[in-house]
Image 1 (cartoon, rainbow, N blue to C red):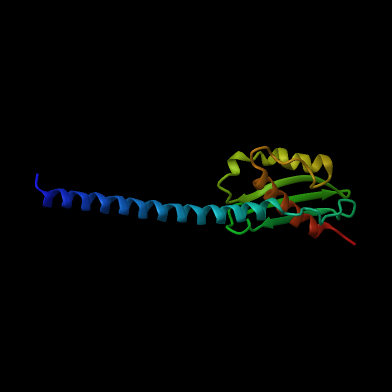
Image 2: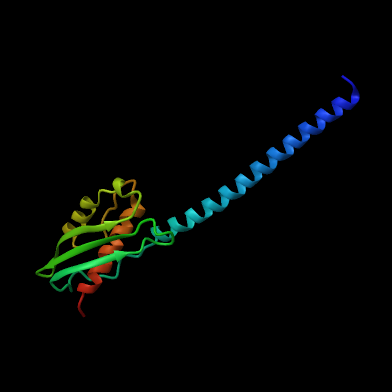
Amino acid sequence: MDTKEKTKRKGRGKGCLIGLIIVLTVLAIAGGVGWSLIAKEHREAGSLPLDAVNFDKLSDGTYHGAYAGGMYKWRANECQVTVANGKVIGIELAGSIDPGADNTDFERLYDRVIQAQSLQVDTISGATLTSKAYLQSVENALLQAQYD
């Protein structure tokens, strides 16, 4: 093998290595940006206040509540809340486009709200952010039921 061929091979090897480094750098940057956006959405969902309803001041009726799902609309959901004798007696999921809805035992979550007559209940383990989104739609329904 002559010197000219060796030089050509070295040049190709360097070119492949540089190409690989560029691809890995682009992937790392894209991953970092993606992670940043997801983390921002998680912070938003995790910090929902859920403290605007006074359960001692609820008018009887059935109320519709919706939550748009946050920044990326991943946890959008709607519910119907029934109040009788000033107490929440039923909550039904009216709709959800949440891809993680199957992992959330929303019936158990709603039962906790009914039992406690409060939104300050334990969320479903492994589905904390989705649980908070479901509780937000319940809060939005109950804000309509609340009187001064």
